[in-house]
Image (cartoon, rainbow, N blue to C red; front, top):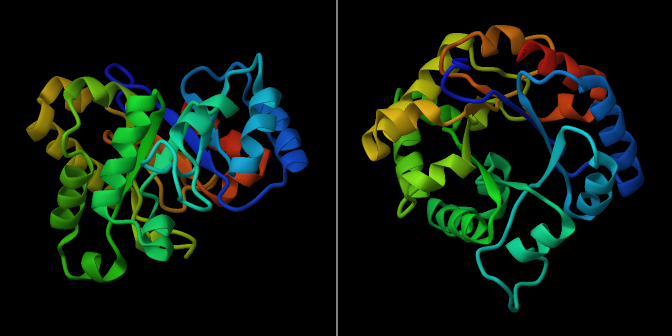
Length: 255
């Protein structure tokens, strides 16, 4: 991390876990454990039904609440989808867009990710944008090409000023839910590739100011080593974020 130019952010992605009552307890415990650890921002991205109670539970604390997806239209015949305005009224401040599981299981493309990103920004939400390659692409030696292309397509039409409200998470698909983790060197290299793309798009100052997280099975055991790398500014945490004690250790590592 380079805290001189950018902010460290540890964000939890609860995925499809936690009922509203469980969410309240987890938010309160996470806030209690991480209180006073101001070296990084703490975000919990929760299922839609948990947002309002999570926001209420987080009131008066440093913990910020986010959503896990958003639709690109303001309203309409899109059964099961959630608009940016709905998220905002529930109290969400952040939203994850382009998560590998959305791409893998629900047909997300770079085109729809770009549309969702623009809709979220226009509504006033802050975005955690996920990019990353699949195992076959890594094994074929085209990680740089894939990650660069995704970053460019997902940010098409997005201005430098908007980057103040965007966090990017390098999230290798092969490391999500598999127990596999990129080495610290691999994570740093990929985050550096993304930063290089940002420099090409927006210039060095903007590129150096954007928080880039690693999001592939970071946990309380490997966080310190991953976060020691220059281009890794935080983590998008899956399973470990469901256990406040483990999540707190990751936050401590980011201090």
